Image (cartoon, rainbow, N blue to C red; front, side):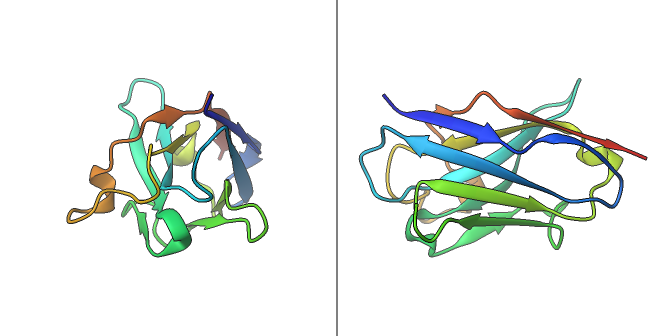
Length: 129
């Protein structure tokens, strides 16, 4: 049974940093296409960062470029991080981790078009001004 467990959320002041973690388990492949999404109250869920299987590529939403970094643990390829710097109040949201049922993200298209098959329960990030 595939599971994704996020951690690392919290309440911080604007300008602060957080590192979110996502542990994938019960998965066939040694690595995976994984992504971070967020959903703020009253808004649609949006993708913020995606990392390809084997770390061959990554994608970021324009709104987070330069502030968010997605990475994978060197020893545990099923553990993915999202480093969030220079937090803004508009970053306040529930952050979800997701994995695709395959090694790589979608090919031939922008990675944001990847359809993800497995989702975690989310971790809350709240940024105060």
